[in-house]
Length: 556
Image (cartoon, rainbow, N blue to C red; front, side, top):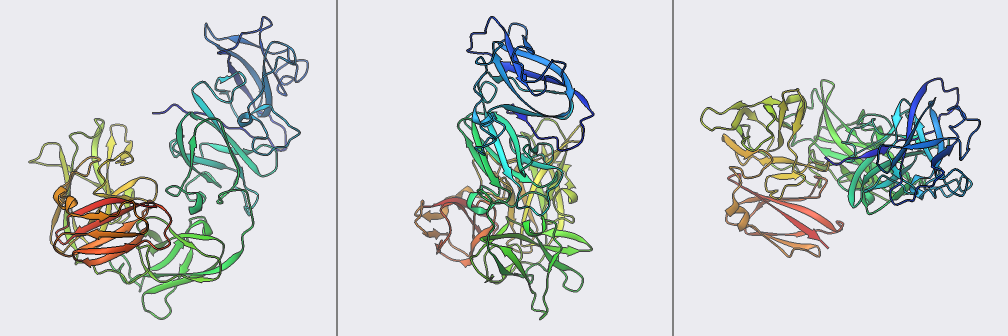
């Protein structure tokens, strides 16, 4: 696991700070000739720590930690926000030059040229040992996240960031309004030459996260390539750059529910949508006044994008449509053509076979050594995914294999994963981020992948696979080799050749949304990418026997 240092900072607004906490400052003097007068720190915390006054360059000395290059001092001060600098000596002129990524006004270019370091104290804390005159600890880069919340109608007491640099844990890494200007900040220390994926939240839990516009999104997240110390922002919440007030227009979305009869009863169930428009909480219901199973709603939203997912509400509980988010781009009042529930592209709902039994088998021989239980999770259970997890049992005939049979699966296409539980009760899902064989996978819409299976008929089937691997029964390498896609890279017109028989062809973007689909394909089909943006797309081909082939196509 990558070692990550984080430094969260903010301003204590109003009131007295009653709590007292221990704060340890550290600085790494590597590469410096330490002054005979010692290493010191000056800041606006010194009087609270017992010195005669603040910003005294000689009053607070740091002590060498053992024989290392680290110097440290611990003070007991009230919780709050403080500014400071290190000195290689004991007089002004010996103070360090603080890099922009560590400055209190990073990204703003004002605050009277203030170039101090700063920290938010809220309980005992030990700061990372940054290099003297540097922005981060040795071997790391400082990423100063600067978030503008000025356009939000309300701001939660917790403004946070979640990403791969902190385990995608919402609410645990907070940003703070340091200068009282609705600009929220956090400094992360990450390995240099790393990639950082993240998104902001106006709150401390999923559901309060921003919808990252497609123009700056990578798998629905923000992404930074870290080559050195970085100031990212100020960036507006849910926008790609500085805050601006966009024009608003009427957008009508239409969802065809005729293909969702496995889980939808129009007599008792309803359809809503969730997205940034309603904080991903849903509650905006689509209607079908003429009874044609096409549900619609018109909303007034800011341009240039509207992001959402439709949901079936059954007994008060939501069932989300599969795949990635649906993104509508518009520059005026727009009526979006009807699309099938769970399909991104407009058009009639494809036919599906009658329900059938499916046996799921996973070979755990090379799985996590810590597992004690194995579960199946998917979009076809009730409730979906983790809430409807099905425990597998050890096979009586195949060592290392765990299996379960799910009766009368209704959806024509299913998405699923395996999940283990260890001796502590912790649960870990399969991850395919580093997979080289993606023939059984499709993007999940969250940056990872799910397994998928297209039911060819109503007959019982068995799906077998090793843990985190696509080497499964029902996936034929010969079949994969018989599918020919060219040219690749493509300028927009792509030919897809298939072997004998009828085939289903679906093309996905990397967020998991279907951007094109073709049914009953024989011999070949031509895909015209039209106005799709350049990038990587996933072509999935399945035949009547359930064999599948998946290839990536690059649009130039």
